[in-house]
Length: 172
Image (cartoon, rainbow, N blue to C red; front, side, top):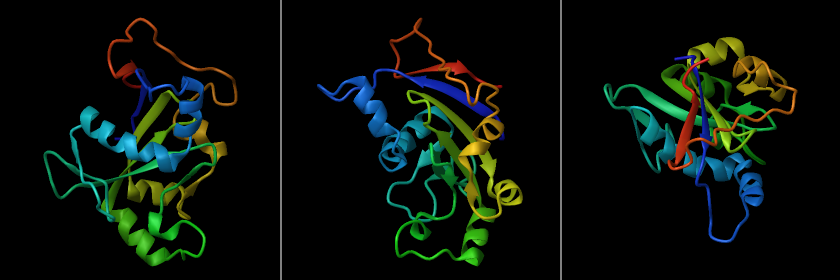
């Protein structure tokens, strides 16, 4: 927990669409989450629960441990329930805090797609650091332990392009 995992996704394709266009599409967290959730279940010991509004995953060793995936984009990260995000929706602090305290969050940065960063963090820890349910974009470098934040640097691994993803650095 609280460890940052870095991956560079490879073999990202959709017929004739160029990689640059796909990267732009995947920078939208709403699109990105549909594919990153099953991908996370392939990479970590968790099971994806489709169609569940309360959480996205359960722990393979302890089904009482629940996880919720949120995407950290160029707009930052809102980790309160999706039902509270959007036009006409209302933020309920009590419900938000109850839910957050029961979950482990999986925050995935797609800012430098196809490089992604994954961090598991308890809801209690997130609430202590970001009690309003939002992590500002300006905190990206600190949150994902990225000393290059603010500089134009992308990590790529061209040695091994035969897998769906390549682990760049297992831990920081």
